[in-house]
Length: 542
Image: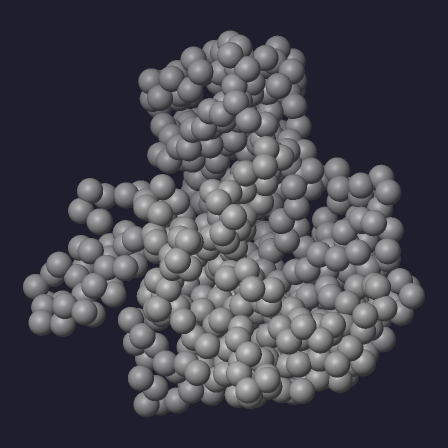
């Protein structure tokens, strides 16, 4: 958001005062006699414990940076000093720190790591200032197991941000402290478990898994449902009154073991509570919410494909019952030996399907009857319903990987609902690598606007400029250069067409997901973009 399954919650950073004195590494004073590291590589558990130790010491290092007391172990004090000068006049009570070790190598005489520290504080001008710095450092361990820092390198990658607006706080530790299912399992992420799960066991940890929010128990608070790879139980976490979470998967029957790529809380039977829909290789599993206590399996919708990528629901025919749209990035055509896969206009994707619901746990497959079979062979990653033309019925925009996106207008033809594909007609085809879609009236002119997240490569223009790149196919060159553009914000005009609003919101950098939301309650829609594979711009990219 594709990308690995991992659960992210907002979570509280620990505040440290720079003047607090704590036990730990003295970054200036030599340690007692050191031992030479053994040739044997530590176990995974030992490496994790060592990483936790180093992270604690880096917190102390960050405290010294923010207080202006630079240690002698710095290989280059110039950059660190620049950061220190920004923080030195900040409020001590507002300072917060976080450290992460994400690469570690054991050599005979040193432990070499790549780490990241995050610091933020409120300045005297009342602005919030934050720093994320990635750097390398080397450490040793003495006979007593105490760490000594040998050298801390200069920051190789940095992100600086200053803003008068309030920031989010990381609340993960506080919310999940009482729930071992989260702390011992889900919080560790994909990389952790790939070291422990053998592929021979049949647990597929590489396919996307989703999550859903909904009020299962009817207490007015959103609960969290987490999808898992096949062989691992899906998890339902109930939101408690004290703002902690409590796992209730087994008790409620939500611990489904089939590989689940997507989930959706919706009221499928119109009884006022949140039922649950799961996308699995066996089909779309329908689970009824039984009096806020448990789930009852009501059936499985059989689909033509097995690799469901997203679920969305709406009442497209306005009969009072929710209908389901299932998108498929891959399908049987994608696996054919003679598949004609292309980056500019791939037509070997899965076949999306629309199921009409009757509100009584019965669904009819109406993809062809509704007109959605037109161009239904793309790599569809996301779909979003919205009444873009304000005529009272929901239309659908579909973001496709490796090709043009689609916009289906909801019309009435011969007395029945029928979708007409109009993306090119109204200017929102956005041929590229669509990953996400979000609707909002961002400029408050009364007309819905559209944001499309795309895969991004800053080499798009450079590659197409090479002499060996199909110089006679100008059209194909144009499409490949689209990959160097980034995301697109489409502003709707009064005539119903859309225009590209310019570069201000394009550089999302491989946007897995995006959503409009009024984060600061000022009446204007803000934009959140989840990114991956971030790379810096070059002047010859665009």
